[in-house]
Image (cartoon, rainbow, N blue to C red; front, side, top):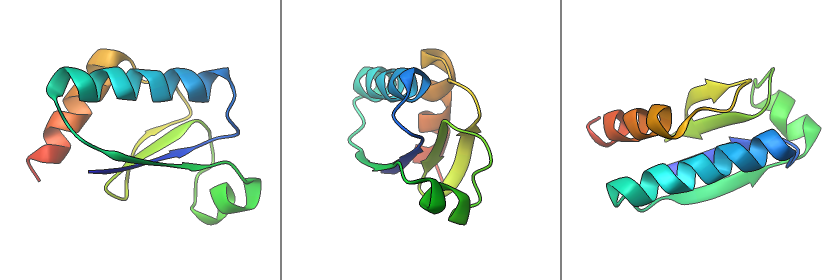
Length: 81
């Protein structure tokens, strides 16, 4: 599973990354994480609010820190696509 985290590595971005890691570990899911931090790259991707998270190229979180339980649900639903 490919995950892409968009943001300037602020506290919210770090929290989102941490919650993602915890959720993936709890579900025993392997994932590859790419971090996009450059403003031009974020805007080019169509992201208007950070932090943002894409799972397999679909925006699943934008402009907030998703909780551990929200990310577990998102990861489970992404696995079944």
